[in-house]
Image (cartoon, rainbow, N blue to C red; front, side, top):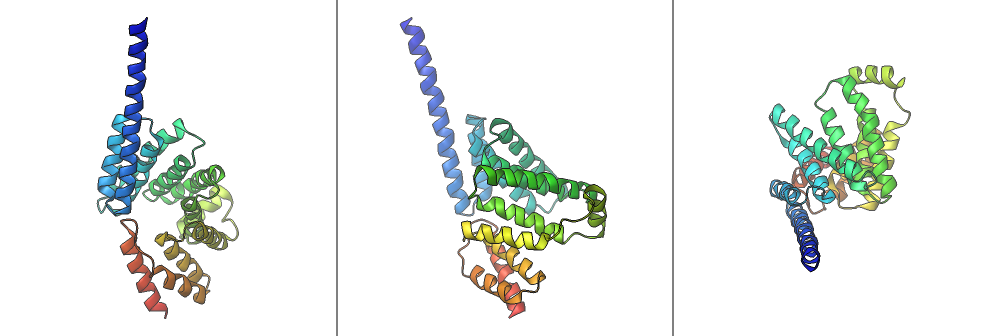
Length: 250
């Protein structure tokens, strides 16, 4: 009996050690993200999943960075592969923790990215699911800034649909929701209130104000954006885009 108990205890200790190791790897990956070393961070998230396949933070991290990797890919097949990986990781996270805010957020991101590779009808149909998962992320974490950004981007994209997408929206939803641009601005502003460091949010908020012909507000947002410190790998390029936009408006 003692041997059985000892063996069981060792199994528990071993499991705990592995779980801790995966969590430590996730922490290291997050630090790499902040150092703008996303490929290395993604590899570490994947390594963490080899240690603990049900680690929600690792699944979410792998999903989000796979989506980012896909957005930078110049090869169409590589982009599609990365977006599919992002969706697969998100689906695993949702299956394990359907009420986890981060899992729902990365699902919204992944579905949105996958939609960009599809036709007008599929893209418009995906908007509904993107909205659903982003709103679930906010439901489970009302202070989730990046989920508000996703909603803002969704509303902005809906306000700027091309003719084919508008036709698809009319068939699928009976037309476009009213006030998509206003909703986008409200979402972006909420994101900014919750996280004043997210550069891409400033960029898209400035675009939304410009589209609404509120140029002073757009310029104000851009002036703030160019003073921010880059945090994520894409931030230097986003900051440069903000600077270029500001110079053209002043």
